[in-house]
Length: 171
Image (cartoon, rainbow, N blue to C red; front, side):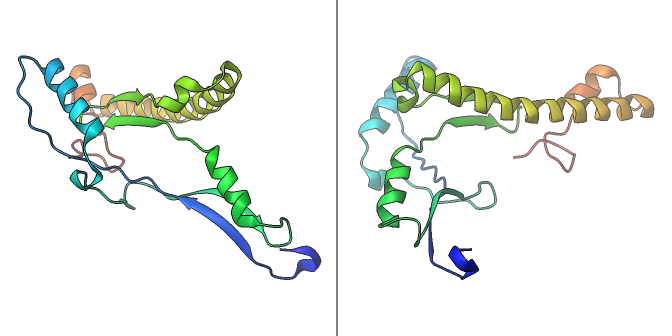
């Protein structure tokens, strides 16, 4: 609420991820060469060659900032300034294999050491919490499978469901 607990106007800057894709045909003598050539083509491809849209079933929207009418002279300027300092890191997950990797972005390579330590520490903390929950759940799942006696240990590990609902890996 605003001063005197009266309703007031707020401006909230929102962000949502949109991943664009394109398929590139190249001729090469190796996968590494094909990848390098395709990336070079993608770097210079016009926007019209890319396709994609927001997928609300896989990604959330987020807030970059909020400003109230009684807090600032120009909330729009404030939100645009805040947006300038918001950057994103990409974590890629292959949900069919359980493999993941970090896709480093150019802004991160330009960040100061102090900024890197601060930001990476925050991310590592949050990712460690998620990892620990997953390890705990995986351990419980293995215990249940062992009590059932329906799998040998290797089969149990290989049949671990990659989806919350169980069953086979997501497609």
